[in-house]
Length: 115
Image (tube, rainbow, N blue to C red; front, top):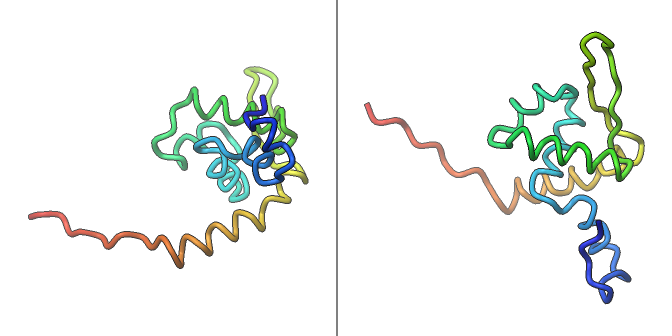
């Protein structure tokens, strides 16, 4: 469901954020690119995401044509998720965010645990 206001529909950035602007969505895309394809693997790699939110994000990515669900077992039914060509086309965007974050949002220094 589009969230952009009518006046914003002419803006490609606003329309793009309607698709990938939810919290966790870009990180789900990142991890799918890294080869995490099973729901349980994504839950581990995306520390802090709830199963409900992950399920919602994967459904949205499927509906928007960025990811596809493939069943690899019938009994019990088990699925994995893969990026579609449309989802994979976001690779330069993810790389740009990675590069920007490396330069402008550096990791805080690690603190040593008190002994």
